[in-house]
Length: 203
Image (cartoon, rainbow, N blue to C red; front, top):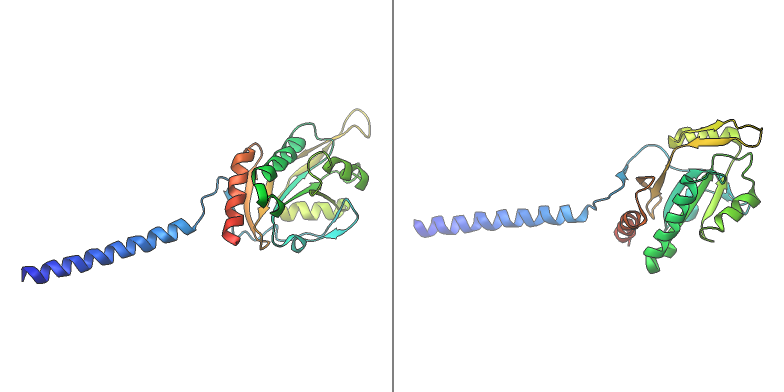
């Protein structure tokens, strides 16, 4: 009787340990991100924009890479250059996987940010990063789809205006799925860690 009870207890214990192992394995498979996890979001799924080389671009053009997409303008004094410089640092931190990172800068100031201006601006950060633009009316529709805020703030002269805008980046995995939203000022190391996890899960 005692022997049968002991064997039964051992069997139950083994089953419990097996279940814990399965649960542990499942929890290990789900990455933990520092950025806001927006996996499954029903917005910001694609775009049609022209890059600073004059080529029409869509999200599918960058399949196989993690895409980090930021909205800003070239005359921005702090947030935009800081964000792009941080992204260039992220690429360095990723080492050999840096080639699988695509930085995209979408201007909210198409009036002043012409293709030559955008191309020169990207040259300050990384030659592989692309600046994208569209017409003012299409920009409004894109911003609505991406839940991005921007507003023209008049200056002392017609050309000295500035732009208020959202400060954050959307991050897509190598399959082109929107996965993360990272807030301004998160830091290059934190962002690099999140991107490394997306790259690892897709390999």
